[in-house]
Image 1 (cartoon, each protein chain N blue to C red):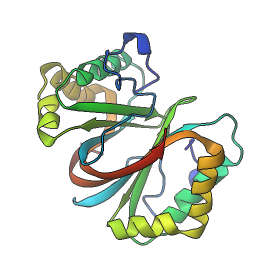
Image 2: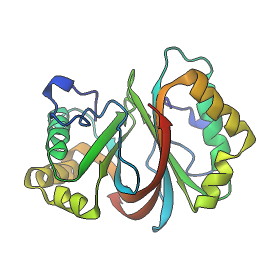
Image 3: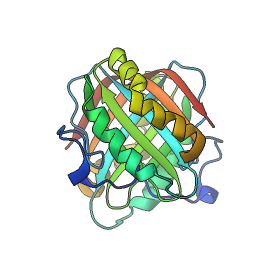
Length: 124
Length: 124
């Protein structure tokens, strides 16, 4: 996802994906989504902002971090309280349309991994 | 980590961090490293390439993916066979110097999460 405009993002304090997410003590879950974009925007930027807003309103959402090297790989990691919260977000109606459009239009390749975060440390 | 020059990277087939990593069937481990850079390069680009080369030569290394939005957040996810492989990489001598320099010089903030990948799917 490209650099987003904080003013258009959701009200969740952890919904700005261009900053470090502050997450609770593990365990919790991470969805690691890596993708390669096709050429041109074709509605991608708008969708990306909208999905961050929607995700941040979902039950069990803990935070999101996103980066894309221009012309290269994009990585978005979202954090969730449980596998159930991840399943509910995957099934969210507008998100399902975005997933389908991603497969057809926006991504030349992608990989999604669901992982259980066991420990963390850092300096924020 | 910025866009890297494939010619200077390690010989491991999964050591180009600007592409999607092809990982084995889960379970395996992910180290999710997110960071905010300080201003200026100060040896960072060279170190980043060197660390990818060294990591790819470590036992248990499975792949790496990296992206940084210009002026924003960087995310590097490396994949490993086991917690033991992660611990050995953390203790690697040249890597320890890079970690220390990162804390002092290159990063204004960072977060490292160790997670167990439980499932994955995608289109590569």
